[in-house]
Length: 393
Image 1: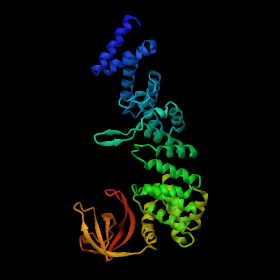
Image 2 (image 1 turned 45 degrees about the vertical axis):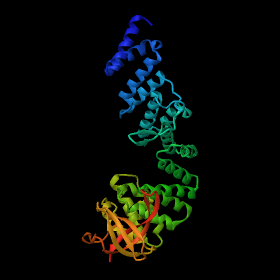
Image 3 (image 1 turned 60 degrees about the vertical axis):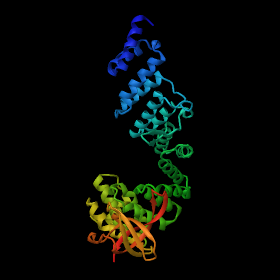
């Protein structure tokens, strides 16, 4: 290394210490292009961190993320952090960010290619503790990004195996998404009971509509139409956007067509109107059914159709369930939940949105009727029966 090069690289290091990162970057880039052999490991590490912090860490520009990620992988090698996870590895962090960005951009094939640049045996499985909160380890992040891409690519076997491996991590911070992918894979290979098992574990902690919809699908494939209908209606009654649930409405229609043909047609009409409004593909058979029923094929007012169906869904949901009676024994100070004392002497937690009566009667000692549904008590980490669909009597 000549004296001029040596002094300029020293200047770059000084700029870095003074947080003059743009000036340091200019020098590093110039000499990386002209004299890469003159870079010491110290210079490579410093340059890598400048690139990571400026172009990768909090960036949304995928081209910049990938371009600078590629440069970092040329500058550095992946460090074995199973032996020393105290100091972060810029190579590892850069590749994990590239994987995340590519997944967000639906570049799933690229995810698979980039995943090969990481040796999972070198990734730390120790969760990151920051301000008293646990964050995913690098190994958990790797499994998360890779299984996400594999599921999108319909590589069911690989997704299933890697999700299983992920659940074996000693310090797993979020098992829900791995169980979700396992359930999706299990459904694909016909292991419906296994899928239902994972999904029911998830739903105790996460009540999203699509989880209920997936359980409905699992039961449908299994041939258990009663449970399938129950979960499909639960999904339909959530506050998620109507357009998200078009396949749920179709499933409900299939399940009730023999017993409730008119309501089944309204569910199909709801699906049709949403697809028409959103300019989505409409199956010819669906169009034919709407035409044969004499319904307006230009109607895009799907929210009106949905509102007309809600009472039917509610009635059907509780059709074969036992109704219970009691009084509101306590309303919590924040006013968003409380407890009901049943006639049998049991106490059930409820949330305010389950109260369907006149809100002037939402007070302690009000007599009510209600149904029971499994809920998850976070404070005690256990499943309990909660009061739902509460009405005054």
